[in-house]
Length: 296
Image 1 (tube, rainbow, N blue to C red):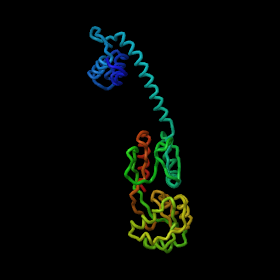
Image 2 (cartoon, rainbow, N blue to C red):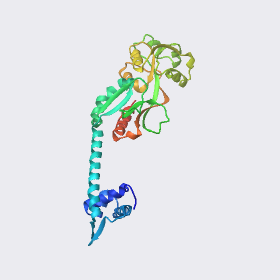
Image 3 (tube, rainbow, N blue to C red):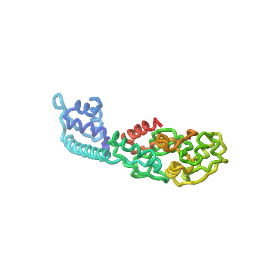
Image 4 (spheres, helix red, strand yellow):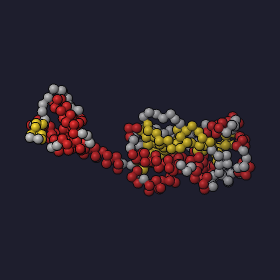
């Protein structure tokens, strides 16, 4: 006779057969074969060292030990089913907390938030913005939307949404717009460029990808965050650089123009979800975001 708790599958097979008074019905409910249920019951009897069923004509009847185990196991499985149901219901009713950089939230996400809420009402999205370093593993966050470069960590499910493309933008209100908007990209080497301390490599990266000497860049007014950088550009204060996704609406509205286009970087805009917390809402959100970004 074995000691300790029997295998869970054996207990499930026995509980279903005892509750339904039928091995065949238990097999149907558990989506297994009649033989599989019978083998699990035999394994349970061997584990306990006693009989749980005896033949009764063409059927089976529970022994005293079987009756006792049926009552206890039925109550235990019913409680498990109830608690699991409550947990699933609680998860479904809880808001889905999405963390993302404040600039991405303000310039891309908020203009689309009403449409997202209409099309994915079951998401009940709650947004958490930050201009600092994001931590996709932070407690209380279901997913993180941000630009990052592969490779992806093994403990995260990462939904790649779009390749990051960066490029210079300026407003038609800028004093030197007339001289610059039709000039080649090399004209920017002598221009005092707006930049952000949160991403100092943006201008050198763009210059290198356009075959320009990044050492010849001349940086002008700096800003702590990308959001303020782009507001300054829209106000006509100079030429800024930004991901295409974050200026798409400004370009469409004519607030900003991008005469030199955009170049791809190794980064991806991606939705990061801790593997242990992955649920269908994250997959639905990723599909929605991918659709929104496909036109950019």
